[in-house]
Length: 155
Image 1 (cartoon, rainbow, N blue to C red):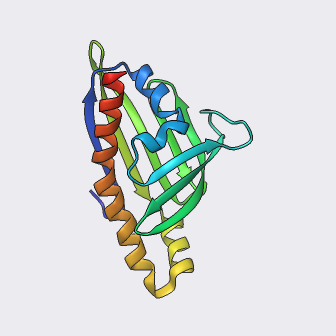
Image 2: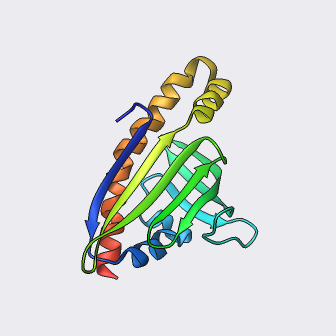
Image 3: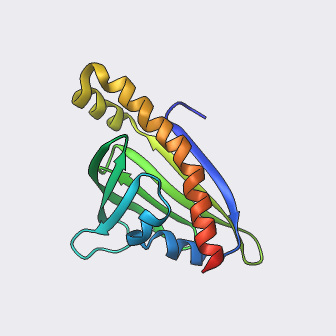
């Protein structure tokens, strides 16, 4: 794992298509994310390449919103978006492993443009803020995957 790249996986008793449909229903994101409390599509968009959505996040006594662009929307295979269109790459990938089961992988990558944006925004405090975001991703991805698994397998 590089300092700015992390992923984890779990096997879920659901089809790749069912899991894709669940995670691309972004209005439900607050049900599984420990930081993102809610999301909504901008301008009537939906899970399609080029669509934008807004997420409202809460952590460490702060609340903030981000806009993200969907860059891959391949039903049953991958859903990928870029925070700010260039700062952080998040994705879910779906791999059928046996009848009715899917290996679900969530990935995070803090891109160079995001690191520069943090330097520009936070100056001397940027490295601490970047480390905080890294730690939140590493801690949050397993929590998110476990919640998605629970929701998918009890629906």
